[in-house]
Image 1 (tube, rainbow, N blue to C red):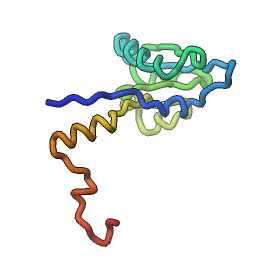
Image 2 (image 1 turned 45 degrees about the horizontal axis):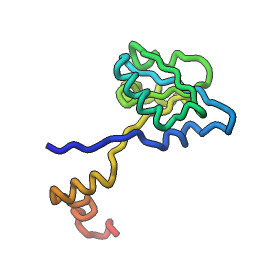
Image 3 (image 1 turned 180 degrees about the vertical axis):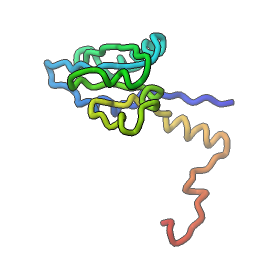
Length: 130
């Protein structure tokens, strides 16, 4: 069994639009239970610095409950909350999915150790492939 490290996708700050120097942007993190909310909030505190962002936390009983927030404040939804919304609900412009990604270097190293090859190496050469 091998484990790979995941980390918060730092493009989140770009999606939110980093506030100007003296402004702080409020965002709302919604999760289904308190322990998971605390864990995700701790991850977010690494990229959403307190001098630029105010993170409000909210436990919701069901994912669509997050959408009852009024106003235009961005709603940060971790994977298990976002994944339970319908495609129509996901179109809400306030929603910003919180994504976790694998470290590419770690995956590459693990792949080399296990003798794995990339999908491109497995693809047959034909008229459709460069």
